[in-house]
Amino acid sequence: MGGNSFGTLFRITTWGESHGEALGVVIDGCPSQIDLSEEDIQREMERRRPGQGMGTSPRKERDRVKILSGVFEGKTTGTPISIILWNEDVNSTPYNEIKEIYRPGHADFTYQVKYGIRDHRGGGRASARETVGRVAAGAIAKKVLEQEKIKIFAYTLELGGVRAEKIDYEEIEKNFFQCPDRDAAIAMEKKVEEVKVEGDTIGGIVEILVRGCPPGLGEPVFDKLEADLAKGLMSIGAVRGVEVGAGFRVAQMFGSQCNDPLGPEGFEKNDAGGILGGISNGMDIVLRVAVKPIPSILQEQRTVGHNRSPVSIQIKGRHDISAIPRIIPVCEAMVAIVLADHLLRQKVYES
Image 1 (tube, helix red, strand yellow):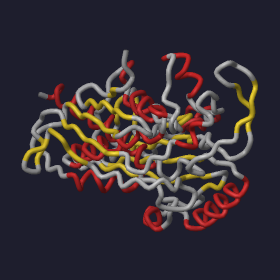
Image 2 (spheres, one colour):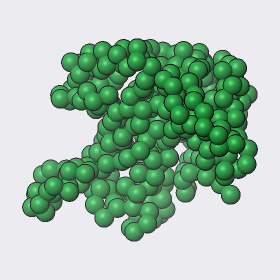
Image 3 (cartoon, rainbow, N blue to C red):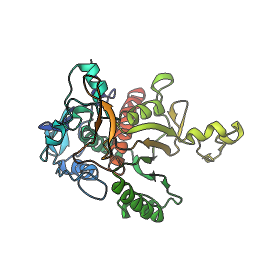
Image 4 (cartoon, rainbow, N blue to C red):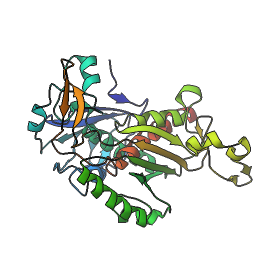
């Protein structure tokens, strides 16, 4: 039994529930003598923290990081790093009325049939709040990657049908939605306000770029780099699809269009998205994820209770209008964890 751990050499295990006392993560396999402080991790936590802007849950969590083990005098020791974050602003009352009802779009039904019991408070283990452990682990993975000058960043490509037409990387940190197109960000803000009035939610697309990744990372056949990246990203609850490079556009291409020509200075384009044969080729790794709408909506919905009798449900509580932009650091974290793992695996080959 498992499903709570991820990775081979750089391995993480997350724990905790949305309305439990605390959540956290244990990271095993992090190399020793890497500079690491709680503040290094806190910076990443601030990016996914709730209650910071339009369309996000008003739940106020400081998400203060506490390192319990694996760090001594500001450096990693090579032993397991354990991190805890306490839940401070929990209100389970709105969930009491629906504890015997399956919420549409949630994991209520599947958890109940699998385990015979479930924590109905905020979704328990299936809640997006579980991702705090991933982001904390991702911050450490990024420190590992920094030593090789590998950088990961992501942004909102599309939200609620509004798509960025321009890609200006300097614009990403200038707007709430972390969108590289200023005009699109303004339109996204308007869209969120419209959807909020309707009591509904929206999805979108996040694009993730990896720069500085050396060629040679990844394994043939089953542990292909893109396969592990896709698994890591698809393990995020709101993600329903992953593209690499040209993605689904390859279905409309000829081979002469899809192939990336090689010249004396390297690849002349990058429809492969930086990965060939499951192994990084030295180009930017380009990934996109489709993010579904938040399933907790204010509109009335049809469902059934535990006794399978039809009922109507109107969900209360504190919820986001979209998982974007708070999901962006989670996507970055999962990519960082996969790359750190494969980087360490490659070093074993080279040693």
